[in-house]
Amino acid sequence: MDKKSFVLIKTVLGIAVLSLLFVAVVYACTTVSDVIKMENKAYDKHKKAIVLFTHKKHIEDYKLSCGECHHDQDNKPLDNLKKGDEVHNCIECHKKPGERPKGRGAPKLTKKERLEYHAEAIHYNCKGCHKKFNKKNKLKSKDPGAAPTTCKRCHVTK
Figure 1 (cartoon, rainbow, N blue to C red):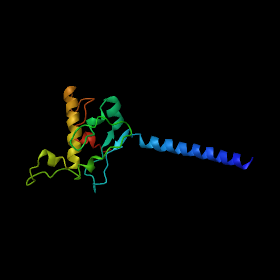
Figure 2: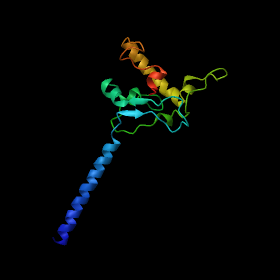
Figure 3: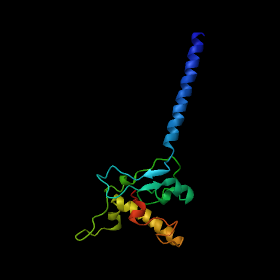
Figure 4: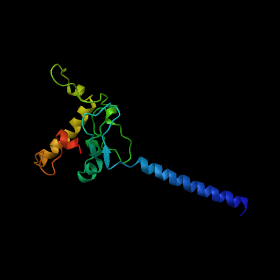
């Protein structure tokens, strides 16, 4: 084999390998896990079991749009998201880890102030949607098929 043929073969193989790597990276960056572990490094320690969010079930089974959960800084739904688009983690805007202060002596907070707390924002979004789902479908929280609205139904311990 002459030198030109050898260089040509190496070039074609190199392009093929790079193409496969590119496809693999694009695929990895455009897929969403079926189940998302709602764990966040902003918390030193979680008080309850980590929620396993079933992204696929919410999108495919319940036909929810991205904007049902994902919103912008003005709380407007991000309905134009497509699979693989970059989304911000909730804590990037709801910056205070944990829940708002509660109990005797806790300050009275506005809704906006409460939603600065990460756990408050998540609970407000998820529980609010779940309660609407149950009401619409005339389900009580313990009925089969009811969306979870209590701590133990989302924060499942084994």
